[in-house]
Image (cartoon, rainbow, N blue to C red; front, side, top):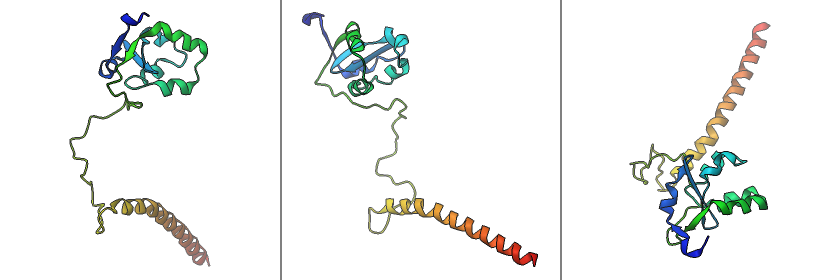
Amino acid sequence: MASNSTKTFTFEDIAKHNNKQDCWIIVNGKVYDVTSFLDDHPGGDESLISSTGKDATVDFEDVGHSDSAVEMMHKYFIGYVDTSSSVPTQVNHTQQPPSTQPNNVVVGDQSSSSGGGGGFVAKTLQFLLPLLILVFAFALQHYSKNKQITGDS
């Protein structure tokens, strides 16, 4: 593609193309329209769709694509990413809408008098509670066996 006809896209523009009917990905600062390749992709269309909305360079390189796969990408190249816009390297495709609850609200009483040790109590309970249940179960089993032995005499 000639340099005067090469387009530059903002991340916001690229992120809109995130479904099976219109799928763009970013690899190494380049934008690729892979919509027509989705059905032919050996890893399935979902692996490409899940790489939309972020810089997919790490995902692409981690797979270890062959030289022919890298060469094939040239025909899907449509432009470059505008480097003045920030491009996330990870995106949560199952992201829930943002909560209207402020970030500093503590649900339940996890605070402590020392101020800031609220997580300690929760973590301690998460460790001790299953342990106490296990001890109780063994004690109950031991007690019931002893009661049967003394009851049989």
